[in-house]
Amino acid sequence: MPAAQNLTIDPQKLWDNLMDTAKFGGTPKGGIRRLTLSDDDKRVRDWFKAACEGLGCKVSVDAVGNMFAVRAGRNNTLLPIAMGSHLDTQPTGGKFDGVLGVLGALEAMRTLVQSGYETNAPIMIANWTNEEGSRYAPAMLCSGVYAGVFTPEYAYSREDRDGKKLGDELQRIGYRGTEPAGSHKFQAMFELHIEQGPILEAESRMIGVVTGVQGMRWYEVTVNGQESHTGATPMKLRKNALLGAARMIQAIHEVGMSHLPGVASVGLIENRPNSRNVVPGEVFFTVDLRHPDDAVLDKMEAAMRKALPEIAAAERLALDEKRIWNSPAVKFDPKLIACVRQGAEKAGYAMREMASGAGHDAAYIARVAPTTMIFVPCLGGISHNEAESTTLEECGAGAQVLLNAVLEYDRTLGS
Ligand SMILES: [Zn+2]
Image (cartoon, rainbow, N blue to C red; front, side, top):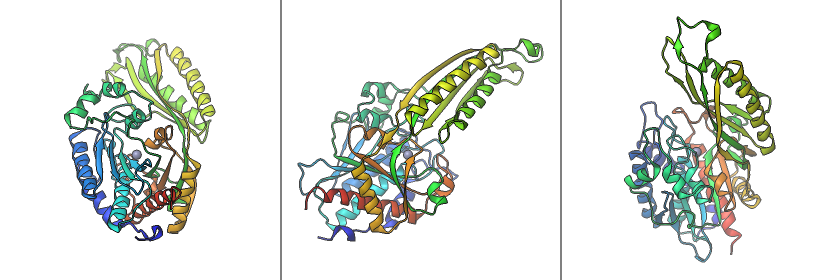
């Protein structure tokens, strides 16, 4: 049997899988549009299942479509060590967000199988349903169900913009599994992911050793004024919902600027009736607040909740604001973080510790099992964009450190 330190992944094989599966939902600009539970999501799931079974793994699906592929270990009374991420993408997503974590895990698994290396514990790959949250809010929905944050019934009832329910779409593509959600236990999870920010690239480091995820909260805001004729309504008598929303968006930006490194964003806006000669009567927009410290996030929320009603009153508008999602700040497991650090050292990569700026399945999984993440750079820090780019070398480095970290952890379980 080969020694653990000699197990080397094949970056080219990983790259070929990334490029081959990018055709499921591939866009003309070189990105991927693979909304969760769409036909393209079904195609990539089928591909992934066949690839895992081809390696001799047993694949199962839980009640909310989470997929688990397990290779037996020497001691199968031990719970598996998991590697996982997601295969769904944004509407104009890139080729690496989430996908690298699943296909990097597949390459680590292939390396184990083809070398004949026997681990102490079983090794598992997880593909989590609806991480992106763009078709069905909230994001990280089904890793959340796994962790007991949401019930399966809540997940089933989520509707997309066309009124199609998540439960029905799961059924339609054949991925509403028989295993109860949360029943497929594992003892630890490592998630490989692109950084989605500019820090590693700016510092020329290959590996981010991720210590936690910042807290984040999502809100929905509706501003109501009065539709009226743009020509016949004097400026002083208008109740312009869009003007109020514009001032609110500015105020939300200031909330971010005054709580750095916190961030505050409005990314979705709907103006009604959106006609050139009608004073806007109703505007809907979303808010996304994030900070590594939940106590500061409380202050950001309070600042926003002070500013918005003041603006609404000044413009004589009605305001409806509600928080629809709260994901507290997460601290990852010290033992797993140490395994990643050792794994990166063995492979000889420059690294740094960092907190994740984005949300990930690992944030919910950390509530029920020791968890951590590994980051690799992405060009210009650009993600959630068809131009998202990470090199063959960077993808390979991530998969190698993933494998090394899993083996470091496995070594602590026996000889
Ligand atoms: Zn992702």
